[in-house]
Length: 521
Image 1 (cartoon, rainbow, N blue to C red):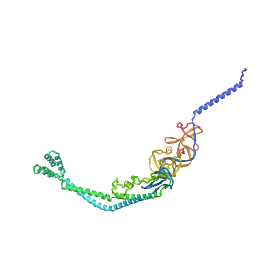
Image 2: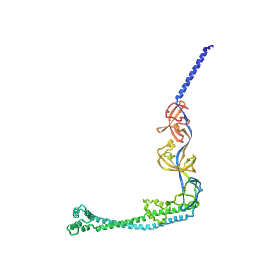
Image 3: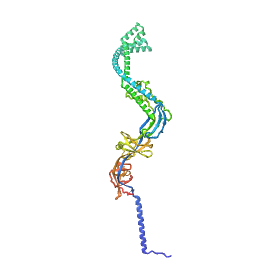
């Protein structure tokens, strides 16, 4: 085998190729190491566009028009055409009845009204006479009070004083005379409480000691009541009687009793009118006034309805209205308790929640100024279906907040106070359920050709907002304060700090520093 020997030229070429390979490998290794050590970030461009700030809220569905269809005692139910939860349309026949037995019910209500009016008129006629008697009686009471005061002074003046020398001596002598028995003590106490003059007691004591009279009989004479005391007791009893008569006359002539009689009469008229209206409705059958949903049914087809015992009618012919005044616990003329006893009403035979429904929601103290009455509202039901609505009520009073919305947290939170508001939901369906929550959104403001950046591009520090502007030439970032405007949940309007076309770090991390060199992805 012949060994091939390279010439000089070939050796040079091989050396050059080897050197190039070594350099290429070194450069490749350097590039790989450099790529691993440098920081790369995603960039976002500051854009121009339209933005609409929308409040994202949660509300609770309520009924705004609940109808309780009244059925009367003794009504025969011919048919019930709906079930609880059914949606009804305007004009739907809900139930039908046989009302042939209801004539007596109307008659009783009319008798009650006539009885209440009769008592009211009788009271009004007697009230003026009671008032004139009251004036005369008041004068008699003043005179009798003066007489009682004068008699009391005389009786008080006639009573001996316990601390005089004569009284102390008398107590000692009587105690020695009668002994220490319980009877002796009682007699001594009675003598000094009887009002007998001290000189008279001393005279009787002297006669007793000298044996001129029977001891016990003499002492018992001292226990008799004086004429002044008798007159005082009689005057006091007369005064009590006069004041009792005065109280009765005040009640008979006062505004409170007059108001009670009038309230009962007016309630009896209202009860009569409602009964007549209910009978007319039962004759026609219950018909839906507008679209809605059936909430409650308390009647059964083929059965006669009977009023619960607690709601039975009361006959006013058997009641003295003035006797009911004692149940009023204040002088505010609030007779609601009495009226509810006399006219308890009946539970609704059927309850319908008529549309529209409403949703009650709360708005932060700062955001409340962004909404106004009749402002459009979008409501999303449980199935995701959207319904139109409008703001129908804004409370003038704020309350402490229990929750916060996402819009308030990311946008314009303003502390813990909230204001309650209400929105009407137009043409709801079964997915809008009373008592459940619904999602709500309100467009509050729109800006066209606004400077916009993604919400995630902003960092917050010491109550201020910042972005990191990217300089493509130097590949460095600059921490820049910005002023924000509207917020739509994804983007912020920028009022100052950067301009359209600027590049910013899309999602800055906490490790990025002002002036740091970064590489764009």
